[in-house]
Length: 326
Image (cartoon, rainbow, N blue to C red; front, top):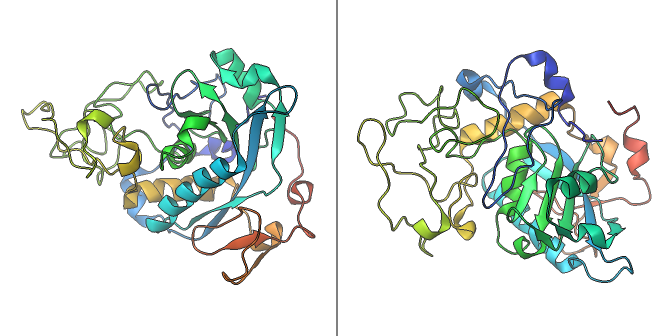
């Protein structure tokens, strides 16, 4: 069953949903896909507060338990995502369950169809956490978020060390469009999308609907050098002005190692979705304890602001939540 993380937002009204392709391959919209209800004109009023998000790791291996992405690679992917969230003062903390779920099924090592992907993401998923599935290969790119407003993420093995893919997909889970949304038309279910102007005079109505992210005609990795500067002239907008996109923005298709910036309004969107969804954990629910940084844990559980390790003697997934899936 595909899970919808943000079902509590259904009462908030008419919003947008999306899919994607190329570097990250959004799976596509289910008929039950939750739409966003984000007050774009009120984002400055969203209070940014500390949030803790439980993350579960799923590693696909061969039938005989061989192969699969290494724990070191998984650690690297989480560390990069944590660093990006922390350096932008998002106050979004990833709490990684140190107990890995191994899926010993060779059929899912190489994802070559959407049917395969849907089947994989139905395995041991949960409404109240982010589930990250690591596979060897994904035919549509580096990774994918199941939906905008859902909490399953797929990451290919070759994307665990490219700095930004996991954080990019987390951004989608928490409501963020690509920066080029609308300006470069996406087949994502948003029938109102339109091109944003360089002057941003239509920023609340077009593009990614945010006014602090420059209009983006869909810059790609080859448009950006190792210093994260644009090296190819951009197209012009409807007014004849040349686009000046931000090659550092996390939600662009820029060079992967350059995508480290999350704008204040993007953070507000993520916080709004988290605060309205019920996914955020309290310290009491998690049962974690702060430990001095000079006492490292062998596990890779961290938050964006401190080294935080789960108190394994007190914490179980079943203790946190009860209820039925819908």
